Length: 262
Image 1: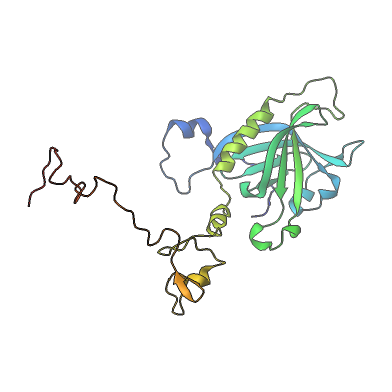
Image 2 (image 1 turned 180 degrees about the vertical axis):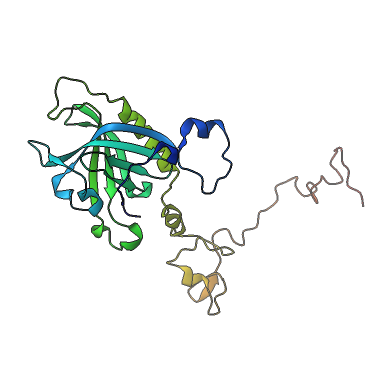
């Protein structure tokens, strides 16, 4: 589920507008157009200069150094937040872009870029998770989305940051549509209590509760089977109980609405 390179920009007709999606039931849930939750242009991406060649699709962006830092700036970027994926597209000097699947976005959050400008931070995995066996092999790219009309270094002018919160909110909604596929597997890996046995049974003591044929039995302690806590306990009747609650009703001496009959 790695990044995908795009050599042409998306078109509005490629998507279902959010308002239209909310106002009517789709004619089909299969093969329908993705829903467009947010679209903004004239954005700038900031990322470490050392990561520009980390992925072939990233290397196609036209970048310039951010003076006084070790970061690079990618300007003239348009963002498309759809129910299918996140698209970052640079229109000039050469049209190029990337499509990011939501499961590859490990983290996204709002932040203060250089402690002054409201921005969107993303932590993106460059690997296909299905082909990575060791977490140490995972390559991560940090991308900061900066609003239109920002200045580097920051100036007294206030850039239009309203879109940052809108993009963040849209990404929250779309990310929820693509839950982590490993979440259910983690639950299955938890220890479970074997059914039909006494006491708590885990992977560590399972052998104490199985016989040589694989059938459940009591735990063997000192060569003898021992039932679990509470097994074999007899509850004694309290005074006055002997003639009451027979077969679920009061006994013959109980003056109740329902009387026992022979």
